[in-house]
Each structure stands twice: as C-alpha cells, then as structure tokens.
Length: 186
Image (tube, rainbow, N blue to C red; front, side):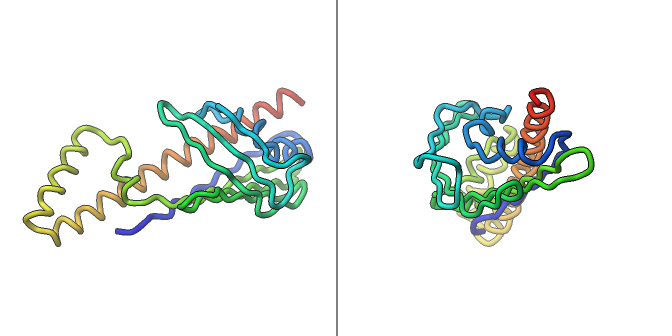
C-alpha cells in the first residue's frame, strides 16, 4: 500500500461580518493560538507586512509530547474570501480556508488535505490488542507474504480512517474555538 491522502472539511457559522473573520484566519499566529489541540511554541512570518501570495510562515507546534516544525507558503489569497497554504514538506499538507457572507454573519469553511505514508500510519497510537495483531501480521509476512500484504493494507486503511475521524473532530473543535473567540471579542 502506498501513501494515503486524507481529506477533512469542517464549517461553522459565525455571527460576525466577513472582514474580522478573514483578518483572524489570515493571521497565522492568532489563528494557531486558538487551536485547542496544539500548543504554539513559535510562529514567525518570514516576510514583513500583511499576508500575501508567496508569504512563508515558520511554525513550531506541540501536540501532546510530539513537536512539529515546518514552513507553510501562502499559495492563493483573495482578501475577505479565500486563503490557501501549502506546507513545505516532503509529503502533501494543504489547507484551504474560505469565508463567505451569510445572513447574520459569516460561514467559515476549512479543508485540509495531507499525505500519510505507510510508515507514519504504522506508528499511529493504537489499542494494545491492535498492536499485537500488527506484530502477528509482520510475523505472518515471513510465512505467507501475499496474505500478510493484503491484511497489512486493510490495517493501514483502517488506521487512515481512524486518523481522518480524529482530524475532522479536531478541525471542528478549532473552528468552534475561532467562532467563540470572534463572537465574544467583537
């Protein structure tokens, strides 16, 4: 099994006009600090002035005991409407943020697309029973490689599906935190 592309999307309606919503989501440090699932260690824009196409942001974030460090480049920017970023990583990680006016406020939609390699999927935390099954499959590969390959692919797909569920839940939580912040600080 090769790499898996995981796509998630969430949207929230915010009782605030488009401009302040877009101002927040196009400010990488301000937006990241509202993510309840990450701790910001350091975020720096590598170019001065407002965010624009080509702008690069360095991020150093912590989730649990893991630290993530990467750069992301703004690949598309339409003020008060659309923002796209792509991480400068060996694998795909792209984020698209859209804001649109609705009666009484703004709809904020975020889509994320990331490539997960089999090695990353193998190292996802799983229940102890699943880990024992994983070791058994690795042993089986010595005796029945064809059966082991098929089983290995099924397990990796299940892990990718579980990761997708977690990513969707966390993205919804992040957008709700943005909504709460904007509606209480307006």
